[in-house]
Image 1 (spheres, rainbow, N blue to C red):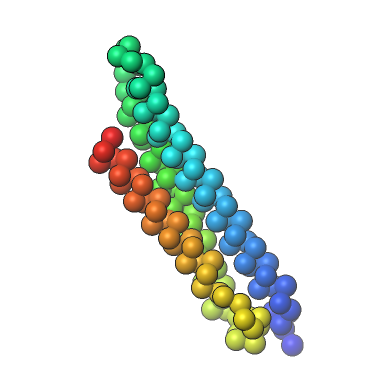
Image 2 (cartoon, rainbow, N blue to C red):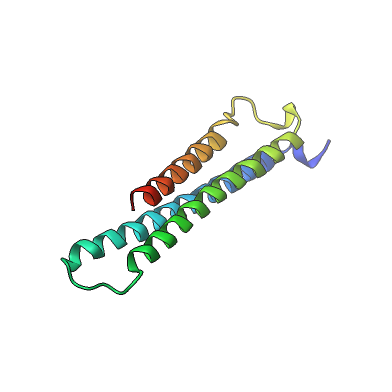
Length: 123
């Protein structure tokens, strides 16, 4: 009987996936806020002279955070799926939707990449 027969091992891996998911959401949210702050500054300035490159700086860092969030979501999905392959069918508790967490992470990553692409081509 291996230590992996304990369902707490699977649930610990799932909690780790969810922790990385929260980190990805925070990075994506920060990227969105940083990028939109550049737009806010342009609107509030009302024609006043902004420091040179200000809009490009907020765009760069916003997209950087968005892509970092997408990378975290993708890598955590890969890591979780890799761990699940190490478990036998008996070691995964019955009735668990093992695809749900990774699927949400991949959708989150796709949304972040789409947002970054949108910001780059419209900004």
